[in-house]
Length: 112
Image (cartoon, rainbow, N blue to C red; front, side):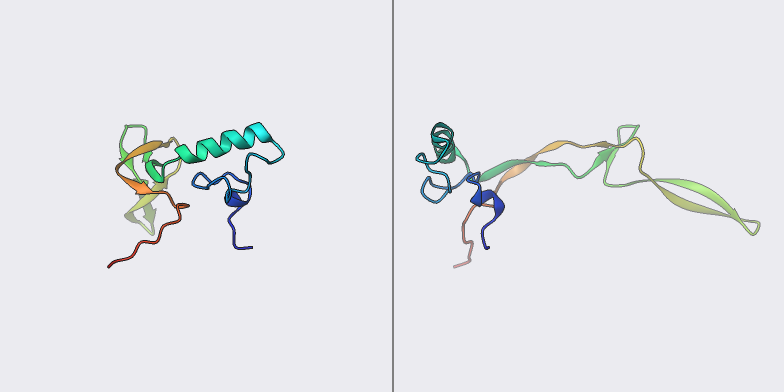
């Protein structure tokens, strides 16, 4: 209780070998040693993220796409917007303009 799953398995990238839950003397000695060395090289910054927008068939980029349809009800024509779900391609990986701090990095941010 209280620890995230990534910390308890020793996969937390900012852990020191003593606090990471998988030091070099663990059951998989070589793998644990490689993990401890990789933990020192990990950076607390995030430079990319997954994009939240989509491309449509025309190459336009947006969060949502709609098409206008004409509906006839009681002899009256009315325009209605219908959301498009098909043939949309996810944007993919987006490079961040400014690096962000990783969500699992233990830092206290306060204003002095």
